Length: 203
View 1 (spheres, rainbow, N blue to C red):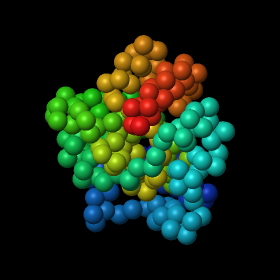
View 2 (cartoon, one colour; view 1 turned 120 degrees about the vertical axis):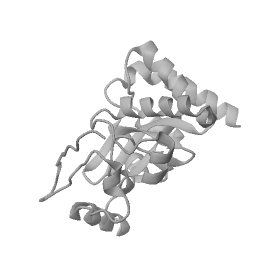
View 3 (spheres, one colour; view 1 turned 60 degrees about the vertical axis):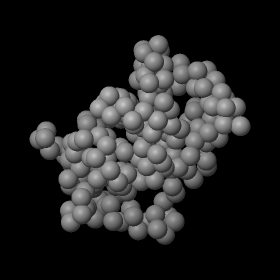
C-alpha cells in the first residue's frame, strides 16, 4: 500500500486529518474529534444533508436545478463493502475525485462483468466535515463507494448516477473528465438529453 499522507483542512479552530488508507476507518480505529463533532451536529440537525443543501442552494451551481430534479440521496460508504468490490483498501489521490471514481468503476466492471448493471459513476454534491463540495463517487446499488474520501462515512451524498461506460464515452468526446467542476457548459446539453430519455424510459 502507498505510504500514508496527511491533509489537514480547517474546521473552525479544529482540524480534520486525512489518511490514505481505508484501514484507518475500520472498527476500533481512532477517529478525530472533528468527525465526532460533525456527526453530533448532523444528529442535531445543525448541518444540512447534501440533499437539503442542494435543494436550498441549487442556484449556486449551474447544474444544481437539473441535478436536484433528477438526483437522489445515497447511503453513506461502508468501508468493508468498498474493499470487497474494489479489491483494494488504498485510496486514490485527493483532489481527483472524477478520475478516481470513473477509474474504479471501470476497473470493478473489468474484474467482474456481473457488476455491469450495479456499479454506477455518480456526480453531485457531498456535504463533508469540511464543507459542501461538488464531488464524484461510485455507486453500488444505492450505496456510496468513495475512492477519494477516507472519511466519507461521515459525509452525505446527493447526485445523479450514470452508466460508467456511457459517461466515459462522453468524457472522451468532450475531452474533459468531471462535469460538476468548471466544465458544465460543455456537458449540459448531453446530460439534459440523457436524463430526459431516462425519465421517459422509466415511465
